Length: 251
Image (cartoon, rainbow, N blue to C red; front, side, top):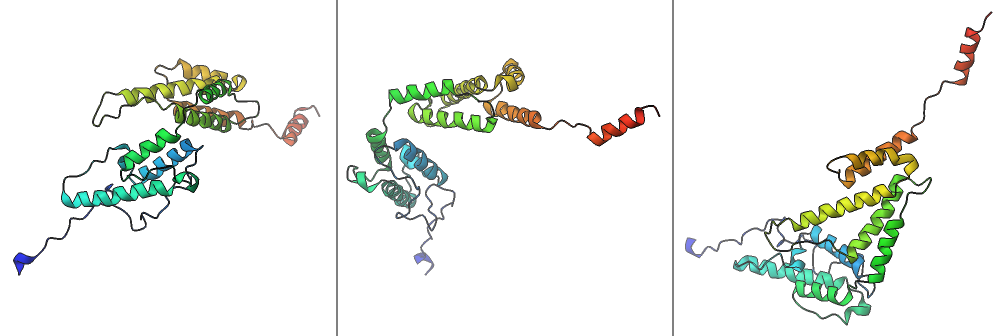
């Protein structure tokens, strides 16, 4: 009878954080980095990237809230439990016994950070010293020099994350201002370490601009300058010079 028909469950948008692809089961390992007692920074970055690429990191930072609709609530619980298991799958067996087994992804994420994220003052000092001393030595390409800086920047951010506002819907601009200041500081570090004999003029030109350009724009401008400096200067062939001398000499 028509009155006995049951409406099919609503379809879930594949781009929704409440959706799981066919291959995304709780037994999957979503990162090759296993959490040990001494590599929390590397592990957390890898896990964060993997979860964000799947639109699931909101279960860990609390931004994905429980829905009120019964169907979506059930789907939320399925995905939430899967995220918890993904985190547990990424923990090395040597320390797994020391980790509790909560059903809340955010509780588990914060517990691991509290237990294994160690802010080392000596390490921060060492990284800042290396940044101050990082220079483009003779014969070093701009790309290699920038890569050395990038490695130090990433390591420092893991120890000293930039200020940010985590309030949902807030438009205070704190996060944007902090990132803009970080970019400006890195711009100065990059320019200070450049080979002055080669890039002194372009460095002075970039610093004279108002407002200061972004780090990425300056980096690409210096790369272009490097290519121009490396371009061979056209010289006349020896045979052409000799022919001109013969033609120009008196008979």
